Image (cartoon, rainbow, N blue to C red; front, side, top):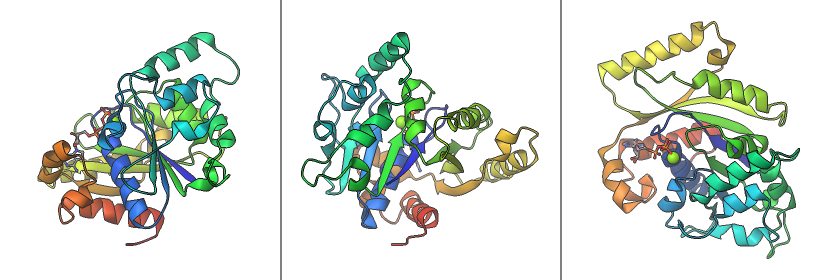
Length: 271
Ligand SMILES: Nc1ncnc2c1ncn2[C@@H]1O[C@H](COP(=O)(O)OP(=O)(O)OP(=O)(O)O)[C@@H](O)[C@H]1O
Ligand SMILES: [Mg+2]
């Protein structure tokens, strides 16, 4: 299983939307995908109509270590082959308590789950049960995000081009460097330009960002490779009420085509 984290300290840059559509595109290519909602807002859980406000969310139980049977923490979605670990506001309390209590294993809770969890039907470990795990992170770096980085192979940073696009990117890259002490196989793959409007302004902005990244003195900035570009689509805005993968709602729109091409170029597997 390859684990990919979507991470940026900025909100509204399409971390959740990219998680949803990457999962869908991987699934369309025949992969089994585990989605991990690591954001107390629960937007990914809502997108798959699996959000529950009242109960302690599975992700909070994993962070607290309060679980015996991994099966009950993973839910099927309407797409056979995409499963989800859901989140809600209880993740906030779980993270707070974990930091308050401290403890040597506080960064190992997600790893413990992935190592110890067993699929009851097949007897396989969780890692054997899926081809990909996609983690949708919140716009901050708390203990739940550190736990996510400990189990992540590759980080993709979605970036929306505006005058503040660079804000916080050096912190993200610094955190990834630090987390390598806990997980040596962690790799920052690069940025995915999202919600891109093909105006002269944004094209110039993208060019400027590329130069900034190439010329920056900080080694952190220089790690940013542009992996792809997803266009803004009015269809996405309409779809936010329907909540479907964009390829199902409007397969020809720019965003659907761009996610398709991005996943093909990222994995090397076309569809
Ligand atoms: N290609 C696109 N075209 C138009 N709108 C888009 C596109 N991608 C994402 N959006 C919209 O942008 C908004 C923010 O997206 P999303 O919730 O995925 O961001 P986020 O980074 O996960 O935010 P947060 O940090 O709050 O979790 C959503 O309303 C989403 O529908
Ligand atoms: Mg989100």
